[in-house]
Length: 268
Image (cartoon, rainbow, N blue to C red):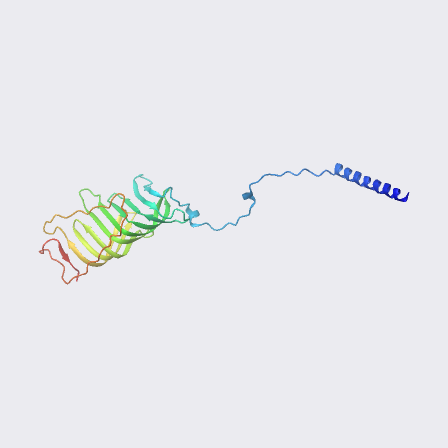
């Protein structure tokens, strides 16, 4: 009898607890949880590092072969500069320094035309007038600078051969410490070291300086027909470096006007 009474009391207590819990849920209803779908990437706190060189200007070539980038005069819309290359050798590197095969740059001015070519080059590029242009460059192998006057009645042409060439846009300076050979209708010059300064504002070449002159051959003094230097090909060919052998200065003196044409002269 005592055992049955305990069971009845326990059952009654359990029923009361269940009724109390049901009443609580009815009067104190928990709001429904709403799960909003969100992109996991948006909920991740990412570190914000400083901008990489590529992010600063977002400089990236549109394609990696046979690329050309033109810069026109903002007022006259005339073509002023054309920079291009045959192939980009480091397309997967996040850098503004491009390693290039057969880079070239053309300068179109009212007074002259200039074309610079090489077999290899490392060029730091920047955005100019919505296009890409070299800021600094290191060219090597078969480097050539072709200059042609565009003045009426002036047919002057000049071709400069080098093994390497550095370019700095800050000073508009082209320079080399290596051997240099300059060929024109009037003369042929061989030396070591060169500086060429181009002023883009006045569109003029302000300086062409050969550091050490090894030899100078003057043409046409006695009416000899001068040879015209051949300009670089429109698409320079890649090959072995055209090494320039410096000409050693020999004993002699500067030629006077009564000497025969095409005479080697050496500075004293």
